[in-house]
Length: 109
Image 1 (tube, rainbow, N blue to C red):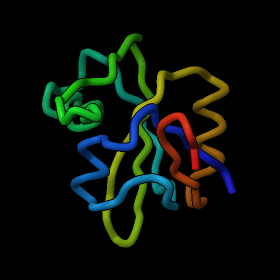
Image 2 (image 1 turned 45 degrees about the horizontal axis):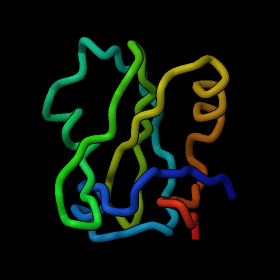
Image 3 (image 1 turned 180 degrees about the horizontal axis):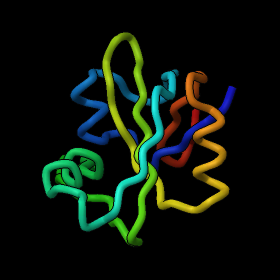
């Protein structure tokens, strides 16, 4: 099974689907998104996480082109963005429909 890693366990999107890594999810679709087309609402949804103290912070986004991955777990949807490169795009496109192990934080348990 493929694995996708997140820098933090407490992303707002995980709290919304009431799951914390590790868990599994199926990659439904891969999209490309230009930074200038990204709304502030989507950027906030996808990058907002909470520190151990409970403070909200945002994962920094650098780059012009992003790969958006749409995942499903137990009937619930969430996304993640990865900076676009040709090898990454090919990797994720070839994995559409597959299950991924979702892990986060330093332990990747």
